[in-house]
Length: 420
Image (cartoon, rainbow, N blue to C red; front, side, top):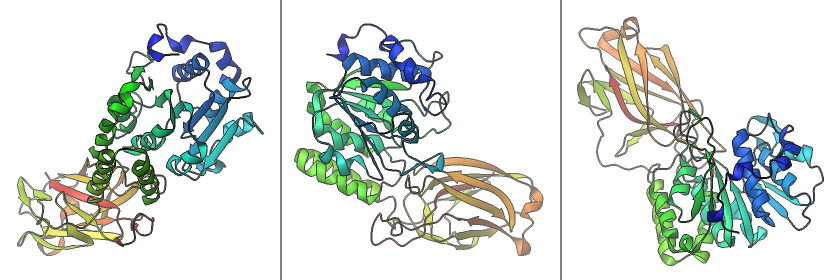
């Protein structure tokens, strides 16, 4: 069966099957009603025998799949999730809802605490249906697809959820574009729901592998050069690299290695000269400009884009202007995150020892924030103002197992400070 031959809204197909489980997963599924119908329709239309689910969460989608295949003894579902506990409630296991509804089901194999790259060889080839719904931060979905592609059947159907999660209609997480990158760069036949979800861009899509997918697979590897939303665990990179080395051409292996090296540079000390990270009333200064900045502490060596913190505290002390009024602190920063180990970082800001605000970030991509500073907060002693940072979640790449050489305690990369 071919995806391109479907001439009707697939989300309307076999709705009676979905009704058997719809009520039970209503409060736990992270798909809308339309998205659940879309997945259900595809499963019942193609009737796959070997299904791979990457990203399980509570198990709402697992339940939809198991409900569809329960009368087909030869059909099997393999579900993989890097986490062990449900991210919304650490007291619950990953897949808890599906376990509750399909206890003892022999058609389902659930593997948790591992990346799909680590278990795909064990799962084996001949996979004819995939649901990919993981971190949503680049390059998570792309790495997962690269790992599994050699094991997919020639006409495998791949469903991607949250292809437009960065759209404000769906989420406030504007960096969640990983699935969109994969959906748009893959060469394959594709469809999205025809009926739409409140007349906004569809947040779920499907593609079917064809002859062009392998022919243009290098485009998927090149997409790894897009800025990453988090630092990928070394364990995942190593497992993926082993697959790329043995299952792909040398050209693609080289693209993979170069992209890893390029993104790793974001964390390694690099010294091209001080960047202009501090701007005060229209004038740009390096972070250690003589005569303006009195002192800095708690920061690492500068990088081309800015500077990482190094430790749990940092400060910048600079000259107080002759005339003070209420001002705005404009801060551009990136954050040291490694999902699922560290999904976000919190930074507490102080002016002259007085609490200003808490900044939370969940992306290695730079984000900008504005904070109002009242005049009385800037009455520093001896003509200087102290801007202080507290990093309660600072952690080193070594502590996280990302490498064996970087002991810096990282939390925030400071790209620019502007006081207006």
